[in-house]
Length: 331
Image (cartoon, rainbow, N blue to C red; front, top):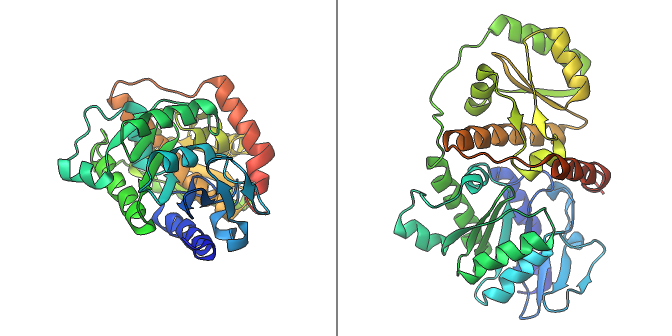
């Protein structure tokens, strides 16, 4: 593909992925093939809304050399592995989509998927966990590629989707989410009682105190809040932006305010979750994260699978995010 066209395509793709909810903020990454030796790839840690054509990086898949004013995505090794494995792949998307991320925690051995769907995806497998950007993760993905799979669920890290074009790759990502949603072991139809009076009073107080704060009342979040179940980080994006745990707080204004002064996300009994941020973009991202984390926790519990990101890894990821990626997104 001609380089200028590729740059424009990647910028537009990032915005499309934000609109679909398959990614948020700076998470995930996108690339496309330029020729036999080079690809164009999104930069590290930059908000998709603010990414311009000049920010896209040209990367040689054989030497690792790159050209551009920004560094290439920290997951460049995964993209390189894909293009080396599949000469017919011209476009790659790494997403953090909700249901595929949750399914990736448990595995795909009993996945309800038709042969037609499997064929459209180009094969699907699961890669074992590795910290973002590490050789352990890229090696795990490479093993899946050797099996011929063009869709890989990366444990605790989202999905990798490969296609011959942008259109095909986005279609695959959307199909993957449909398949994974119907495989979630949690009923989204159950309705929970809400204390409207207390909720209104609580919201008025916290909105007077915090500039960017919002209420999350998705089915999964209400289920966790109603049962008094704290949410532990099972996905690296929650560990990065929120931390190891979203606690449950009793529906008391003083308790909730004090908790929000320490944490940027809390569950409130009979209310849902409250998220607090420094910017509107961060608030929107936190809403998505809390819901995804709740879905993942409920799915793994229903599947009798225990999986959490360890204390050390969670602390490391949050520190790296705070010191690096949170500062890069707007530059």
